[in-house]
Length: 233
Image (cartoon, rainbow, N blue to C red; front, top):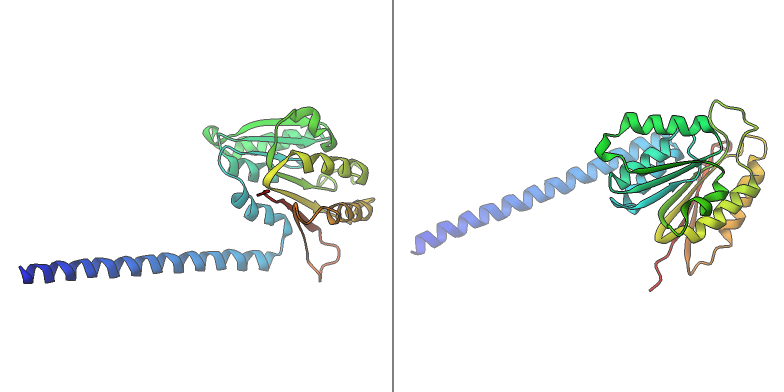
């Protein structure tokens, strides 16, 4: 009996040690993977990739998300992947070509079962309440400026963007994220960026966590502003 217990104890110890080693190896692999992703991002230094990193930490399958400026659909695709087939994504753009490109991108990249309920609205982002009703969203993203490859004069403007932000503050759920990518290299871009920063800077710290991310040694690069809506206790 003593011998059997000793053998059994040794066996359990071996399994236990093996489990520890496996868990340690898994954690080490996860850390290395995260470090690799971070290194690749830092090397490329593209702020437009940040939404892809933040989205999965904010959105859950089945959530609702809003792309206030669809453009070519890159952000819409990111949001759609996060909320999945049971979620909902609403996209806005003043360009019919942009909405067509967005729908085409999602249809090419997503399997039918992974496609969220998709509503693409041919209107400016300042009209959000008219098309959402009483719905709320867990993440709302803005990629301001103009559609790449199109007329730079057909760009977002400070007035309409501020109106859209004001609506977004109310539509966003507690615990949700507002992401605003700003550009300064087109006519009106500097004024719009300054207005966005001023608006976000005035948000009450007790209700919002506001950040700005900018590449200091690339003055013409876009800058990213985020506002996380605190969950009231």
